[in-house]
Structure formats: structure tokens, C-alpha cells
Length: 381
Ligand SMILES: NC(=O)c1ccc[n+]([C@@H]2O[C@H](COP(=O)([O-])OP(=O)(O)OC[C@H]3O[C@@H](n4cnc5c(N)ncnc54)[C@H](O)[C@@H]3O)[C@@H](O)[C@H]2O)c1
Image (tube, rainbow, N blue to C red; front, top):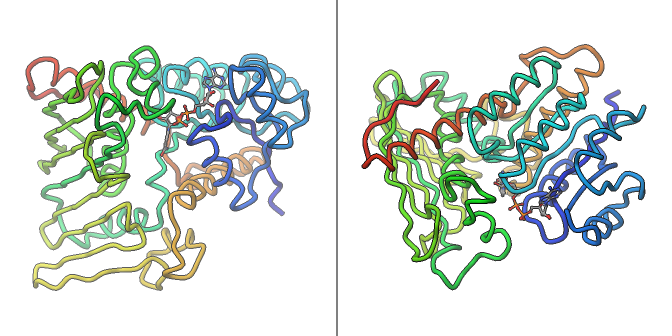
């Protein structure tokens, strides 16, 4: 029988965006129970959130350092921690839990610089700890299906990939986007990029997961469109992949009318695949004879690697929370196997720390390209 794991959370206080999504996603499969947390640096908000979530008072901690030390010392300490704070804090918090010997799930972008990420990987490897970076979109059943289709050669050699993630929520200077928008647009809390780190990394990771392509070099134009802003809010990037395929990635927060418009169109030598996050129950496959098929999640045609994550029948829609739940399904299975001594690398079906590092190298190359007058820059691998 699979034992129910326990976890702790850092971030995800009252009104926070993604912490709540992680809690709901984990609860879908009842694969782990929240027993500890440090939800906010504000003591009242922290306490209120701990009480609302039913935590015992002694496991609602004043800060993450205290939490890492105390949980690692307890016989019944947490099996893993979920880190859902603003980007600038990720490095120190991840490091504290890894050093305390606790498996980590951290949201993207992993940290601010790839050097920091490399240091986290070194500690995780040394201690034999698991590390997931929650690129949520890779959890969709249809994304896993596309990954399998491309691997099987369904559309031949990939020639070009058009990918975009437009949003419109930060379209003008009078619209700060609440506390989520404020920290994303503040270099002291978000780092050297806003839009590219926030959603551009999703584009890079989703394309990489679906196609298996590795980026060789980029030519980027990172723009600040809204007056007074210090960080990018509209990014256009030309991409060259190893092996000769090309692509274009666009991410934007000033595209009025767009919400979470992550869209990927992959063009191969024998056909094309189209996927749209806002209609993620479907995959369109077009063949050279001009015939297009729409494949719906939930039907037998799904590959086994995708079908095993189907939760509801076709057209009883699954979405963003289920995609996140699928990442946790694999991650908690791996954490449980680590505890039981039965873990093997083949069990992993979630985004790794290496994917987080790739995302940061993509950001760094794009920044260098944009700051030097939009020139081609090779990714430092
Ligand atoms: N995977 C996704 O699809 C996705 C979606 C949204 C956000 N994110 C990422 O999740 C992270 C959080 O984003 P958000 O939009 O939820 O932010 P948010 O501002 O809504 O929430 C951040 C929370 O962290 C708390 N916090 C800040 N510093 C803390 C500290 N030192 N200790 C404890 N709590 C602290 C804040 O009080 C707040 O409750 C970011 O890295 C973001 O890029 C990922």
C-alpha cells in the first residue's frame, strides 16, 4: 500500500496565486498531506493561513530557516517541501531545505542565475535528493501525448516551431496587476527579467518537452512597452535548434484580450501538430495529404505514457490543476520510492532541476542578445 506522504509549503499565504494551486493539485490524488508551513513573512497572515489549513501551531513557522531545521530534526518531519515564493527568494530557501536533507519542489523560474541553479543541483546530487521544477504545462495529458507522437516519428523531422504565450494583464501603467504584478515588475524581487522569466520560460520548456529539441542559439528583442517599467513586458525571440530546426518564441503581458494563450505549432517533414493551452483537451494533427485530425484527450488513441494520467472521460474537461496534479503524481511516487529504497531514474516523469537550469540559460542568452543590439548568442551548456 502506498503510504501518504507529508509535505510543507513556503509561500502560498492568503491571496497568493500559485501556492493554492499546488495545494489543490496535490490533494486531487491525496498523495501527500500538508503538515507544516511558512506561508508569509507577515506573522499574522502566516498564522491565519496555518490555522485555515488546519496545521498544528508548532508546525507553522516564523521563517523558512527555522522550518527546515525543525522539520529535519523531527522523526515525523516532512517528506518534501513546496516552494512558491517570489523568484528572488528561491535560491536561499531551496538551499536551506536541501542542506537539511529534504526533497524539493520549487516553482519556475528556478532561481535568478544559472550559477545558483548549478549550486543547488550539486547539493541535491550530493545528498541524493529529488528536485522538481513545476513547469505546469508539461503535466497536461495532451502535452505528454504530443511528446510521445513526435518521438515515434509521426510528423517526421521537425523543421520549425512557432510558439507564443501572450497575456494582457499588465497592459498599461495604471494597471499594476496587484501584488503579483508588483513583484514581477520589480528588479529587486524578480531579477533581471519579468515577462521572459515568468512566461517566456514556459514557452521554452513546453517546446523542449514536446519536441526534445535543444536550443543552440537565440536572437532576442526584449522590450519594455509600458512607460516607467524597468523590466521587459514583450519579448520576441528567434531560435535555432541543434540539428538545424528553427523557431520563433513570443511572450507578452501587454497583449490585450489574451489570458494564458500558450500556443505551440510544430511543423515537421511529414506533418504538423498544433496545441493551444486554452483548449488543452485537443491536439490537431495535419498531414501532407491535407487531412487534419482533431484528437481528444480521453480516447483510446492516447499513448500509454499519456493515457495513464487521464482522470475523467473525454469532454469532462481537465485543466491547469490536473496538469499540476500529474507532475505531483510522478514526483510523490518517486519520493515514496526513495523512502522505500525502490527508486529508479526511469520512474521520473516530471520536470527536473536540469530543466530549470536550461530555462535560466535561455533567459541569460536572450538578455545578452537583446542588450548587445539583437545579435545571435549561443546558449552556454
Ligand atoms: N507554474 C506556474 O504555472 C506558475 C504560475 C504562477 C506563478 N508561478 C511562480 O510561483 C512563484 C510565486 O508566484 P505567485 O504568483 O504565487 O506569487 P504571490 O505573490 O501570489 O505569492 C507569493 C507568496 O509568497 C509569500 N512569501 C514571500 N516571501 C516569503 C518568505 N520569505 N517566506 C515565506 N513566504 C513568503 C508571500 O507572502 C505570498 O503569500 C513565482 O516564482 C512564480 O514565477 C508559477
